Length: 255
Image (cartoon, rainbow, N blue to C red; front, side):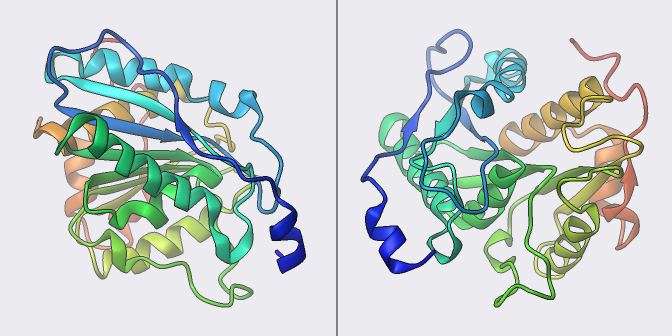
């Protein structure tokens, strides 16, 4: 974004949406959900982008109620990534700071969708962040980016990337390449492919939600991962980075 455009953008502040689920007596962990965004924009985010993540926020809060899990959807200042400013990643880092201020030293999962997934991956190095979940991440083309998308900040944290093989908005091959680079600095990286599904992962929504819950509960609270997730984390590339998400995954779990 050009300097004059940046100066013309209104000054706004990021925020945390209301907590989902019943307020626990003691907060044991927090999931920050990061909505989709745009490559360049100084406009306010659309409320519709946050609404897409509400079902997942509710399901995570319900699954983690006995562990004191709280979920919040992050409200960005702007809807755009905006080049080197990386505004959405800045807002994700602010939200992690805000969690520490509100709840103290609790583990945090950054869970993002689309451009929010890029923000989660970029801000994943925040010292309070315990794990990162990236759904259909929007990533820049490797051959046109001035600097490759960073991955070193993810070291020491479980990272799960989920991408539909028929995604026409964000190239699943780009998330595979990033996962492959990240695996070299962080052994706890895995990636699931949702065959025949598109960007919204709507065709296999139940399986994706079950996988997200399993990953989050295991990473934040030490619950045992489901066997497919264990296998994906343990498998060497490319096997653990092209793990197919089985139809019916999590069907036996509380829906």
